[in-house]
Image 1 (spheres, rainbow, N blue to C red):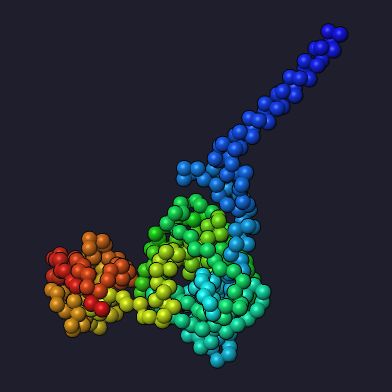
Image 2 (image 1 turned 180 degrees about the vertical axis):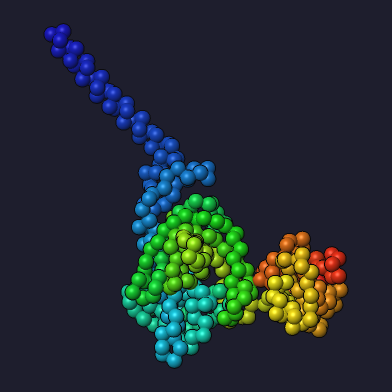
Length: 369
């Protein structure tokens, strides 16, 4: 009899323990925000607490699904002959049209543009506006072709090492819809590029650096965070025999700040300094203009001419002056000078440090339009 009582007591304790444990767990789930949030966790999302990541899924499949059908193949034609292939993504729709963002260099020179959806439907696209310095273009297609709209995120909130991925068409149509992933390798990188088929570095872009694979055909496609939000527009790849895994994207904030102007085919109004210029290393142009640069000057921009009626013409600047700084920041070459100028608006006053007769001087110049 005593033995049976002991057994009953043990069973009662076991049952009581389970009940107490269950009630405790229920309370934790009900009243602990983080656990409750995890219970509602949606595959592919990052869970944070106080701004710190505490859970991150390794699979990007759900995030890919959020944007996949918003990504299109962009094809540029010259006289019905396929000339270029790139990628674009739908960022907006209205009552009649869907709007696609891509790179300017994907469609430049084309007299006809087509887009191919993930359903393999093809349609002609109308080019609304483009700018070679932005390397951005906006296309428009009939709304009936739109299956999905990409969600716009914020590159400013990204940290180095954060997971990123791309969806695009590397090497063209046959590899459309390819997904590559990596990490954010760098922010605020300055990369020199050429425009209008120039062989010189005409312009500097401030870009995001990634190690996700980007190949010809990816240009114009979205760079996305782990939640499937667009944080950049893939634009170029640094190609060299000794370099691997360096891709670049235009920050989405910069791209979207110009989208409205491109939609209305408004020419981007870059401010004008009002000078003809060349790099201190361009010996041929310097000789042609009968300008000599001291041997100890290795970086900077040489003024070859000054345009009448501009801010430069109203300043102390002259032909032959060597610009070395703008607002105290070093000027490496003409691409960097143009980049710094284009951060301003017409009417802004800038301070240029220049060298004349081997003496450093300063001039204040009002930028023109």
